[in-house]
Length: 626
Image 1 (cartoon, one colour):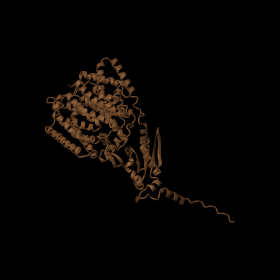
Image 2 (cartoon, one colour):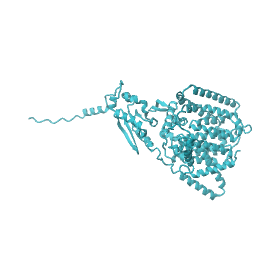
Image 3 (cartoon, helix red, strand yellow):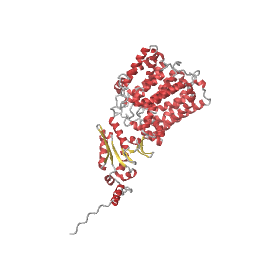
Image 4 (spheres, one colour):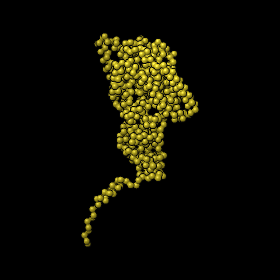
């Protein structure tokens, strides 16, 4: 079943690099023990703890689960790095590196911005907290000063913690900032292209010779991949980890004994760790398990009887169990659905129209890409049906799940990012179609040049929106720009009261949601001023403009403190401002019973008095005697 022209590498590497005898007993012991402990822990937590108590465990348990995935995956990968590198060869390795660099650079075609307000900053802030405290939680009241970070109040976010976890490692090395976050996202796009290439090089099924590199290029230049690849949304990293699972499954299928059908524990641990790790990035990412299973079954039906593979599944469940607990603890969340219906067949018609229309409307996706994908599907149906079945399952799962989601239609807000989740299987179809057409037309240069020119022109035409910001959420974007401007002007030691402390802490400013500190603000302003001598500020933000209940609360506090405007900007219909609340009036009327009073001596008063002493007032001329 292996295609020699597509994959000129040995088909049975396990013979050339046999595993030590002690590895299999250790492997089975590890998997069974981990599975037993995880099953007992999950059963105990689900039955003996309330959902609120379960959520309190999430900031630590998910981090340890992700640590386990990372450590075990790296152990397996490093143990095979030498033989795998020799097996692939220099040409494939350099091609993969070139694709990674190209993917990173191509994301520069899109503007560096945020498009999901304010979720992207929530991901960043959770990563910031995780990097500093080891806990995956969102800080609603935190102090960020002089390179230090202290969390006073926090809550558990409903979204999985894989994306913030990835960001946290970059923050540990380079500091928490928006620029570092965008760099991580661009690296994820390049990584996905390279790993997709390696996966198809290793694929244990028939492929056209040029399909691996063609699929990787199609992924890189999918317009929405570039558009979202310069943000900090979770979808590009979710796509990257899912492709890593496909790579691990191809490696596991290749690195086995063809005579007995037994696979290697070294590739088994890589497969288990990558599958569990991917599931931490988006809720539907857990559907990567049937994709990996279908690929293994397509490669060799003996995988159904392979004990090493079943043990890998048990280990993967153990690594995934903290994320399962996380999802279970937030099962009552409506995820923004006002009527509580998150998934329903009633959403099918409208979502299908827009999500299927994505491939034919020439708005976000080139028609040439749709043509190539159909050509790839036809080639797979004729030449490699099992791989076609696997690719079809991968596409239907990653694309189809959003058709039933209440906010899954690409027309809905910023939901076009969901197309990034299915971009890799679509690129697989497109790459196979492009490679098959090239093979069919390579002896007819005029026809090949004509088809190639049409495809390139149509593709470039579909990328017209990539360099644009887009009108979507322009007022929220202006709010974030305003925050950056104000943060540069705020005195050191200030505190910002806001609906979105995540943005301010990423900008290196102390911040809190108003409800966390309002009693102190209203009843003990002097103590708050002592803690934050730079001043107490209230951010009149985007949410105050569009939510009347916020506006009433903010307005009352500003009036009660007789706040003064520190800075303001207009953003189309939204009016943004920063009020200073620790006014002399507020300190007198809202000061409280603090023993610490505001120092009565002020530098400006002292300087003015000294100036009067140094420059005496000229004496009046003497009046003449009468």
